[in-house]
Length: 387
Ligand SMILES: [Fe+2]
Image 1 (cartoon, protein in one colour):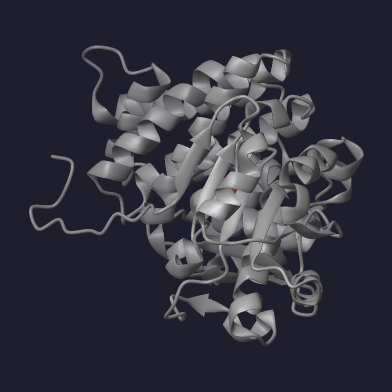
Image 2 (cartoon, rainbow, N blue to C red):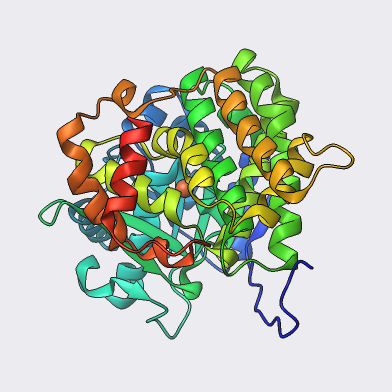
C-alpha cells in the first residue's frame, strides 16, 4: 500500500520547457512569446569568463536591456536588492537568468522586487503574493538545482547568518531553456555535486510526508536518468547526449520536490552551507546517505521505490532489504562519480557542527521529514557521522 486511502494533493508545474542542443539561441522568441520586450540578463563572473554570456547576449540582440553579472556563489539579500535596482534603471520588463542556483535565485528575488517594489527582506515567506511576478526565463548552466521549475528562492541573510526562503507559486519561472551545450564545460566536481543535488531532490521527494503518485513517478525517472548519465558526464563532459539527459533529470527532480518538498538532508545542507560555506550540492551529496539511514524504517517504502529506480531491488527482496540496498547504492554512486565523502573534506571544522545542527531544526524543510526530528541532538549526531 503506497498511499493513504484519503489521499488528496495538488500538483503544480507551470513552467514551459524548451529542450535541445543550442536551444538557447531561441531566447529572444521566448521573451516575445511572454509579451515582453527588454530583458535584464542575470549571471555570474564565471559564466562571463567561460564565454557563455556573450552567446546569450548575441541571441537576445536588442532585447537585452542590460547585464547584471555580480552574483556570488551564495547569493545574498543585498545582491538581489542591487540587481532589482539595476533592472529598474534599465527599464527591463523581463528577467533572463543564465547560471546555476545562486544566479537563478537572485533573478527570482529580482522578479518580485521589479513587480512589487521594496526590499527582499519584506517578502520572506510562503505564498504571500497575489499576482504573477515579472516574467522570468531561466537558462541553467548546471544540471542540478531544478530551480528553473520551482517556486522557491533561497537567499543568504548575512547579518543573521541564515538563509531566507521565498516560496511563491506566482514567481515560478515561466520558461526554462535546457541547452546541453551550455553545460559542456562544467568541471567534473561541479558536474558531480550539482548532479547529487538533483539526486537528493528526487530521493527527498520520494520520502517526504507530502509525497504523492505523480511526484513519485517523476522522481523515480529522474533517478534512472541520473544513474545512467551522471557518471558519463563526470568522465566525458563533452557527451552532449548525456549532458542533455542530466538536464532533464534535474528538471524532473525539481518538479518532484517543488510539490513534495525536501526535508532533513536539505535542512542540514542549508545550515552547513550558511555556517561553513559548503556548496549546496556538495553538502547534499555527502549528507544524503546519512539522512536516508536516519529515516529507516519510516521511509522504507520510499527507498524501496528508489531501489527500483537505482536498479538494486532484486526479486524476493523485502522492503527494508530493498531500502538498505538503495542507501548502499547511493553511497557507492558518490564514490563512482568521485564526490567528496566527508564534511571534513569540504572545509568544515568540528566546532561548526553544533551551530549547524541548531539551525537545521529551525529550517522549514525539516517538517517534511518522514521521521520526526525531536531536537538538534539527532541532527548533531548525523553531522558527526558525516564529518
Ligand atoms: Fe537542493
